[in-house]
Structure formats: structure tokens, C-alpha cells
Image 1 (tube, rainbow, N blue to C red):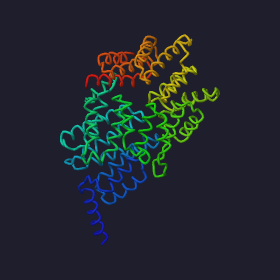
Image 2 (cartoon, helix red, strand yellow):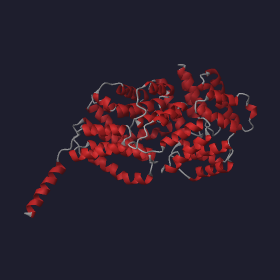
Image 3 (cartoon, rainbow, N blue to C red):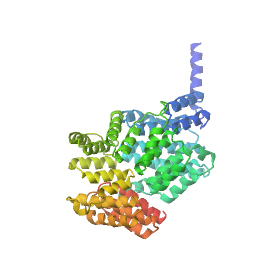
Length: 495
């Protein structure tokens, strides 16, 4: 009898293990995806577990777990947790490979999980592994697009990869060449725009993810900063109950000099415990307060972030901002302590962290007037920033780097005030003063001149200054400025 029971169990298990794997985006999986997209991760995890019990051969729950990994490990960076989950990510890919190859979701799901893997590799400083994962994602989605031409979600991934690959800085072109990836900014963004505006049922289902990617790429890659923020303001996004879109809007507003609106988004979001607990809200609020010179509030927000964040990304940058806040308060001892933390903590995987470390090593204290003007301008408080510099001339400053920063700051402020002629005058002065210096001001000035001429539809002059930016070497933020300049050239050439 025992032997017979054992045989029956063996047959049942064997049948289960070799049963056909399916892609069933049933109601449980659909709801789980929607919960993921608003960052209700606990709810999503519970729904995924139920879906697995309902049908152990359904691959969609496994696919959805990849979203949870990339969200949790990106927002709440934790190297130890990442090490634990790396093998799970590979196991998930192997599981998805057992699906039905004749289904449009087969290559789509695999491509998206490889893209998630690439994002995490970048986040944790594994850049070569990130490139290979991106290449795999690219090849799979390209194949799927050729085989299932009418499957709308292909354009979500393919358009994203096309746009990004089309703007790789020339210093990294060899990687794209080796990996066999060719992109086009124009074609990629066209695909994404079509996708987010499509009435296709799949496009509607993936609308939050589509809007998230489209807005970020529009802001950073296409350089349509004002247009992107206006699009978000005019949208019907639920920035209270959808934390993913709320983060996107707040983050872009902090970087896009819309400080007051960023504060409103962060303060008004639904603070239910159902949502992913993440300290990124404190970080964004810290920047918002600092940009208005609300120093005590900025310090409180940054220190809350430091106390709860277990990762390294932007740690040096935030300690630098704490250093500045204490310095502007006149608390020089604590400012020096924060500068020591810049030297000792975090890593240099981001340009901002690299710059913070460089400045900490130089151990020079910034000019207070220029620093205040910079922060106010970064927050969009341009009239106040300009007022600080109104009675100054280049001769008001003794150091060459301060003279350079002074004309650059006047360029940026006038640029933001749409005083193009004044902005161009000061930017060109910055290029003359800083072309062969290590500070980023001259290269950024050339990039901004390119932007002004591009907006004026003077594409030949725009390309000229984008190339001036690209041809400047050995300066701060070289990689990110080069990517923006290359994006500008691609836009002007319609590539």
C-alpha cells in the first residue's frame, strides 16, 4: 500500500513538473500588477502568493516578482539584500524560459526581467553586467517585435532601449558596438509616445509604467524639461494614492526647479502603511528645503534619510549638502564633520557622489554669496538668486574659479528667466574663462547654449555648441554632460 501511494505521488509530482507552463494574466495577477505600480508592495506580494496557489504553472506571478525586486532594491538600496536576491533573479529567468515560446508574452516577460536585472546592476555598480543584461533585453524584445508585430507592449521596452542606446556618450560607444545595440532617440521616443497614447488594451494596462518611463526619458534624454513638467501638471495622475507617479513628479520637480510643487506632492501623498516604506521622500524633501535656504528643515530631512537608508547611492552628495547647510548656518565645526563623512562614507557610482568627493578632497569652502545664489536658482527662486549677484562684478571675486562660477551663475539665472541674450553673453564668457579648467561650468555653459539655439530652431549653432561641450575633456560631470550633448545633436539631426 505504501509503495502504491509513493508511486501515485511520484506520478502526480512528475505530471505537475512537466505540465505546460502558461501566461495567465488573470484577475489576481492584474490586481497584483496594479498594486505594484502604486507601490503597495505587501498587497501585491499577497496577491502573487494566491495566484501561485491557484495555478502553480502560471508564469505571470514569477514575472511580477521581478518588479518587486527592482522596486525594493532600487528605492531601498541594500547590498546585503541584493546579494541574497541575485540568485532568485537568475532562478526567475530560468523559470520563465520554460514557457511557451509561441506566446507573445514569452520573450516580452524575459526581456523585461533582463531589463530589471540591468537596472539593478547599474544601481549596485556592476556596469559591465548591466550592459550585458541590457543587450539581452534588447535582443529579446527586438525578436519579439519582429515575430509579434501587433503586440503593443513590445514598444514599451523597445522604445525605451532605442532612446537610451541612441544617446550613449561617445566614450561608451565601444560597448554598444560590442553588444550589437543600435538606437535612435527619435524613433525610440516616437514608439513610446505612440504607446502611451494608444487605446490598445495592453497599452492601457501598462499605462502607469509607460507614463513613468516616457516622462523620465522626455525630461532627461529629450531635454524637454518644462514640457514634461507641464504635461505632468495637466495630467490626471493620482499623485496622492499612486506613490510611483508621485515620486516621479516630485523628483522631476526637485530637479526641474519647481520646488513648491515638489513639496506639496511629498506632503500630500497618502501616508498609509500599505505603501512601500522608503526614505527617498526625506531625501527629496531635504533638497527642496535646501533650495529655499530653509536650512534647519533641510538638515532634519537629510539626517532622517541618512539614519534610515542602508545603501550608498547619493550618500556623499547628501553629506555634502549637509556640509553646506551647516556652513551657511555658521556652524563650521559640524560642517567640517559632514565633509569628513563625504570622504569616508558612500561610493562614487553617481556623478553627484564623484563631484562631492572631489570637492571634499580639495577642502575649499565655497563663496557664501555664490553658494546661496546657486541653491536658490536650483530651486527656481530666480529673482532672489539674481538679487544676490546684482551689485557684483567679476572683479568682486579674487579666485579664478569664483570669477568663472559668477559668470556661469548669471548665465543660468538669466537662462531660467528666458533672457536669452543675457544668458548667451554670460555663458560665452564662462567658456572663455573655463574651457581648459576642471570645473564643469564651461562644458555646461556650452550645453546650455546648445539648448538655447535648439529652442530657437538654429540647429547648426546648436550642434556647434553641443560639439564644443563634447570636445571639452577632463572636467567634472563629463559622462552625463556628454550624454546630454549627444542627445542634443541627435535631436537636431532627427536621429
